[in-house]
Length: 64
Image 1 (tube, rainbow, N blue to C red):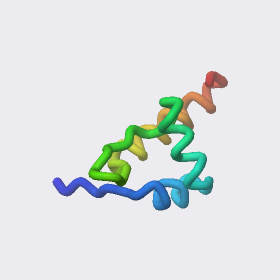
Image 2: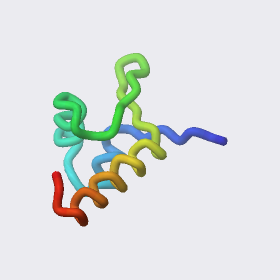
Image 3: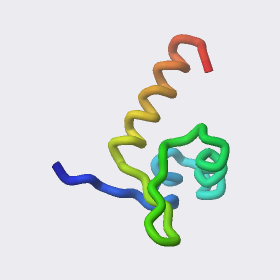
Image 4: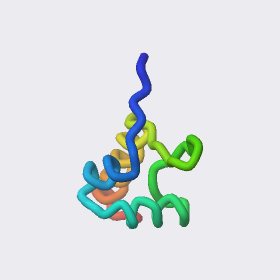
C-alpha cells in the first residue's frame, strides 16, 4: 500500500478552504493530523478522508 502525502495547499484545495484555515485547524487540533517533515507539514490522504467522513457523519446526525 502506498501512502500519498498531501501538502497544506492540496488539503486546502480538497476542502475548498484556504491554506491558513488548514494551518489553524492543525494549530487548534480540529483538522486532519499533519506529519512534520523538515520544515513542511504533510497530510496522509487516507487520514484526510477519514477526518472528512467523521465530519460528514457528525453533520448528518446533528452533532458537532
